[in-house]
Amino acid sequence: MDELKKISNTLRKDIVKMLNEASSGHPGGSLSACEIVTTLFFDEMNIDPKNPNMENRDRFVLSKGHAAPVLYAALAEKGYFKKEELMKLRKTNAMLQGHPDMKGTPGVDMSTGSLGQGLSSANGMALSFKLDNKESRVYVLLGDGELQEGMVWEAAMFSAHNKLDNLTAFIDHNGLQIDGENKKVMNVEPLDKKFEAFGWNVIKIDGHDFKEIKNAIEESKKTKDKPTVVIAKTVKGKGVSYMENQAGWHGKAPSDEETEKALKELGGEL
Image (cartoon, rainbow, N blue to C red; front, top):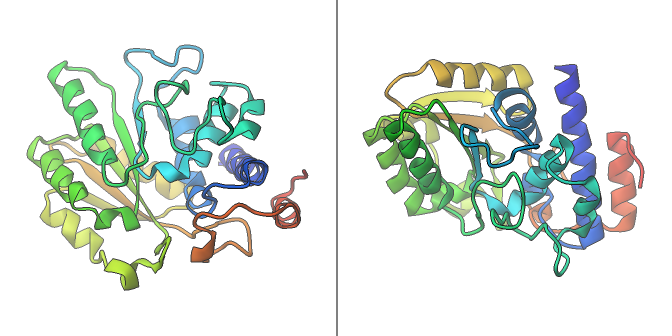
């Protein structure tokens, strides 16, 4: 667990630094997903940075594509590309775009950005593995504000109808979106009962607790004939005091002074 915590903290520092360098991007929802992404990429998924297109690899879909910085930080830390690329985020002619691009970035399995589409893409991957009798699994990370999109629920019906037990969806449930609190913009609760009604296996966890994340993944792998959704309670902007639980940090880059403060809290430096 200590190693995962160390990696997660490194991802947070890289997120802050790359957004500061880019002067744009989405820190809040990237920081809230660090433990989930760390667990998947450094403890769970069958992947190989030396062979990004390995046929039998597990797949990861970042449905909330604006949180690309956490994915990029993980891919760089894992060795898919040099960490210097992180400082070219959102730069013209650079590899790392504002949203994930599967054609231009090794390790990215699905181009995302338009909210609500990721679960449908993950469904296609999971169903193809079923049809081909492959053991690969699919993980998809959604934002809670994203669940206001109707396409998500169409996809949720499809997942259950096709008994995609090789699919695990994580919901980064930080309670905030660009316009404020989810419950005030468009209430999505009760999430657990909704997914249960759609035929899913539902697990609720602390999305910053590695043990709970790992246990949820193990339960999902043992669950048969049902997809699993992990509703992970998280803190938007986790790890940076002035960003935590602040909707204003959904899509705003930190200044040099704010970056210095954040890195001090995270134990890093510019």
